[in-house]
Image 1 (cartoon, one colour):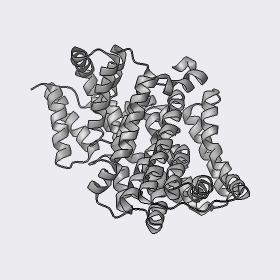
Image 2 (spheres, one colour; image 1 turned 90 degrees about the vertical axis):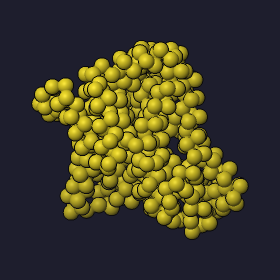
Image 3 (cartoon, rainbow, N blue to C red; image 1 turned 180 degrees about the vertical axis):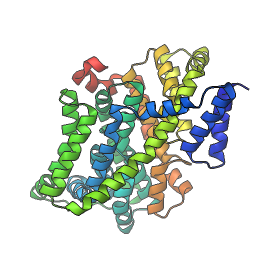
Image 4 (tube, rainbow, N blue to C red; image 1 turned 135 degrees about the vertical axis):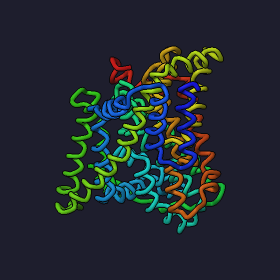
Length: 429
């Protein structure tokens, strides 16, 4: 049997019988290595090499920052600020939902944290205000994916670290598509509010808006600190994450005084656990990613695809279709690490810009977070709203379509996503 077929078939069989993905990755790799006679010490070496990366240290810092912001009352302040800014528009709570996700994305870098934190607050409020449950769940889940698109993004950190791509340039490339997706979702909310008669909140005075802005301003500085620090070369992405945590601690203990010293051990414990789980998946996926490259799969698949099409649009279309498929049953981080050698090989032979390819990969895999059976954000939002996953998926389909339109617009006009990296970090694009 072809070792590559053995590797992938054993992996999918293990997933089918519900063995956890991290263990499926390791076991299928071990089986294939035994079949072709590779020493098992290769597994340990590659697991260590996968996580022995300075840029990956940014991940626990961003996870800790998200926990600080969520537990420290920042989410509530962002909701109040968003309510003052967009609550008066038709479908007010829907607009607030999207805007809070856009703002929270710049603080946590995690879509699941966004869904849980914002969904628990806004889904019940939307239902109480007369919004349909399926609409409330769909908007919450769809907008939460902005957490992996608008910088800082844990997914971009993983992609940059594993693919040797500038994380700062990826962060900049995520700004425009993140804003476009957020605005398109607000347009959809307005359309549905008109169609279904959803209410709006009362208008507020300019003074009240100013007061809400002042309260929300300190945390809103965080994304600027991270982006400006990286693009100006003051610090790396990892150092930026550490600086952001220090700033977050300053806000929690000095400015807002919403944390006490005795709260620190619990927060650190949750951050460590939250970091250990994805890092084990990174280590396990690193083995399979190395094995896929060792078995010459990237070159074989690239040759096969080029035998079908060699056009720019054709290759991107096949990449997007492939990522949409694997995103339904693999977490985005796992998918990136396993298939990055193949994706980058395709990018190299098709002469695709490495930053542009990275942002297209991140955007496409973000949809896997709202498509069953993986669909972690959709499942969390559906659980909060006590809605079945199939009904939630049907409700979110129009919002998935909007993201796909933006992805294809970015493929057709690459500078739509690349003009910020070209402007501020031209040496890395």
